[in-house]
Image (cartoon, rainbow over all chains, first blue to last red; front, side, top):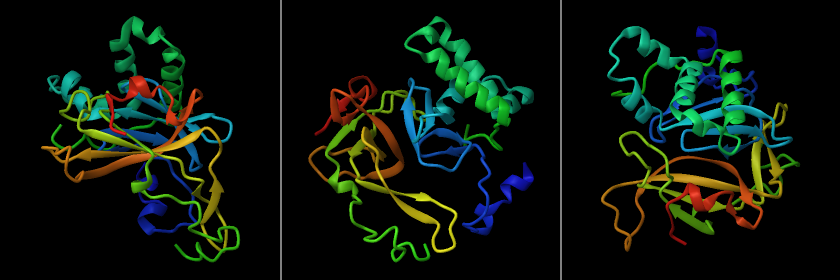
Length: 136
Length: 123
């Protein structure tokens, strides 16, 4: 992952390859992970998950986890153990936790398929954050 | 960005682009948590319909190429309001993010599920 962080963005080499990384946007309180650098469309699934789809063909290529710091403050912060803080940085664990919290609601309006797609992307790419949101 | 305005594929480079003040609809409240705000009440969403947008391309001349926006898509820009908010005065806040969203088939100028994804329509 170190190599990925030291990639084209740091060198401002616009002709370089795209390396996907999970990014936390503090002002939007949202984590974004997108596999490919292509034109895309956001499809809101619910108040926590938005899928990122390729503009052409609508193939899922990423996701946004919204209210990320709020989610942490509500469900992880009291758990002071270091292991659990580290688990929070691995996005597949966050999606798993959100799925559990949704319970039966996940079967409403195609939510399950969307959560499964986000989970699959996070797991296949081992998507993870490198640090917790500020002041979390 | 080098050559973006002069590359034949992009000329005229600025035609069909759009600015925030040209938003044809605006909503307040994004019905989702945002940090300590449990329902994103202090966020506004500007809805635009740009004719074109720029995408990344690997090319020796320029790395940005102009695309026509496909039908059925709108561009939503989100801004977090500075509080307290004066509804009669100028809107002050920070643009936090944006992106293309699918439009409502019944009302192509508004985002899909706009009735449930936003709290209030401002215009």
